[in-house]
Image 1 (cartoon, rainbow, N blue to C red):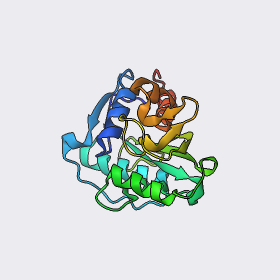
Image 2: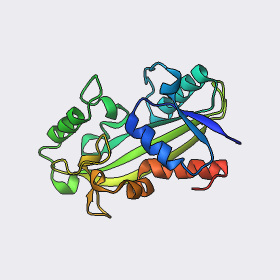
Image 3: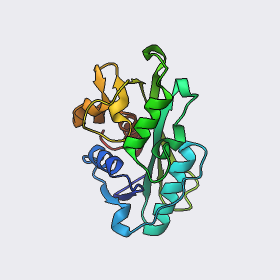
Image 4: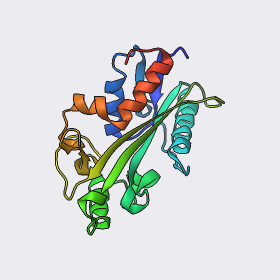
Length: 200
């Protein structure tokens, strides 16, 4: 797939910033769906793959450009995989990172550290056009644990609660450059760039 320009199908500024940074050396012009006033769309899929395709198809239809969508979330073993595809709205509407983190800590209040295993998932879907029958799908997974309290000021979402055991700190305490090498999103984007024949 030869690609010179694409639109990022997200209204999440944290995701947009990370994807722009990860695509900075790709030679692809990256646009935000906000540049085109793309309206939001309900994420009605039951999986990260379904939701990523829904968002990419919607953005491509509104812009006429190839579209890249990220659907990602946190899976916590002690909560039977929750919050999963509902990660962004775990505490309800509107999306609120602090409220989501509070709800997660409350749900895990009686769970010991050894059982607080979790992982971030990221699925990227790239559609060349709205009717693309073969979207390019790439996925990344980042293992960790849920801390007892938030730590760090960087990142967004559940980053302050996600312990990166190899680094001994939360995702929100990592320098941006290191997070963009380790994270679930970085892993998925690396696969995408390889599939496109781009440097990663």
